[in-house]
Amino acid sequence: MPSERDLEKYAELAVRVGINVQQGQTLVVTAPLTAADLVRGIARKAYEAGAKNVHVEWNDEQLTQIKYKLAPDEAFTEYPMFRARGWEEFAENGAGFLSIYSPNPDLLSGIDPQRVATATKTAGIALQGWRNYTMAHRVSWSLISTPTPEWAGKIFPDLPAAEAESRLWELILKAVRVDRDDPVAAWKAHNARLAKTVDYLNRKQYKQLVYRAEGTDLTVDMPHNHVWHGGSTENEKGVTFNPNMPTEEVFTMPHKDGANGVVRSTRPLNHGGNLIEGFSLRFENGKVTDFSADKGYDTLKLLLDTDEGARKLGELALVPHRSPISETNLIFYNTLFDENASCHFALGRAYPTTIQGGTGMTKEQLEANGANDSLVHVDFMMGGPDLNIDGVTADGRKEPIFREGNWAIELD
Ligand code: ZN
Ligand code: ZN
Image (tube, rainbow, N blue to C red; front, side):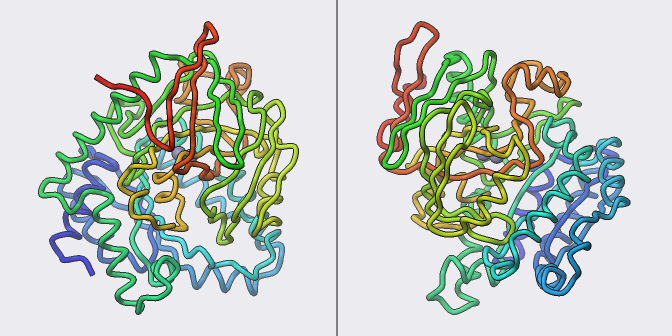
């Protein structure tokens, strides 16, 4: 288990680098009960940093499971509107949103996936107003993880429970650089490195990316004026924050109507408490027209049927195979970790920040510029040691971006 000192460093990192809490700001934390020690530390650090208020919402997976097992169907068609409005009000007043994300990948196995899909969609609709703030980076938000016994047990099924949890703690603290003497400074350097790659790709403005790997043969059109991001970003007040900790990706949006070919997943996808594994998606003019899955087909189908935009891509992200999380050689069954070990796409909504002027555009303008819209945004992993990616320039030349899973570009 982590030392008190490490927990304190992690709390400080979340407050100072994840959200970058400002004087007089409210910090909203959602966390599992199992993260209580860390959350108390976060509250302490946040007040020390000048927070006006720290509002904590606890969640408990056992309660979630009880509800899915026993509540009537109608329960999943309602969302508490006081919560949706409250979150929007927090955002309107410039609060920062820190989520501790540690789902048990098997939490809802055995539960009718239709129930889960209904609940996800209901929440998606209710929280749309709030999501407009977070997805456009109008407010600071950040996602971090802490181990739970169930999650650790899934990664290390052969270890005794306590050992599995300790091992996962170690990996998480390493991935977020809490093992360094000065994690805050280490993040500055890491963000600066990612920014270099981002600048390079932004200058290139490729018109297409071409992906080839076993089971993958996909060409993706890029919208005009797409913007790459990676590492830290700024909210509308110009305050820097880190949306994901850890993060190794650089990402942008593909054109919503521009994917053609087939892509095969390389890591399981934990979607709403169910795993989807070994799946392939066939795209025609941006839209999934055919799909298969070794496991979790029904969950995948429900995800794709959420709405029109759930069948189209809203994000593409590049992560070298030779990177810290990938090199653990572990499957984390947690998108925050697996997406930072692998190139990925997201089905669903695009980040308005990934097109020039996007945060000031209307829904219609975003669409006209190629940005996908949906109630969902679900990352799935497709990178691996055999992935090659080429960028096609405006004048039709092909340039290598990835060779055998790793960067093929030269940065100064
Ligand atoms: Zn991503
Ligand atoms: Zn994403």
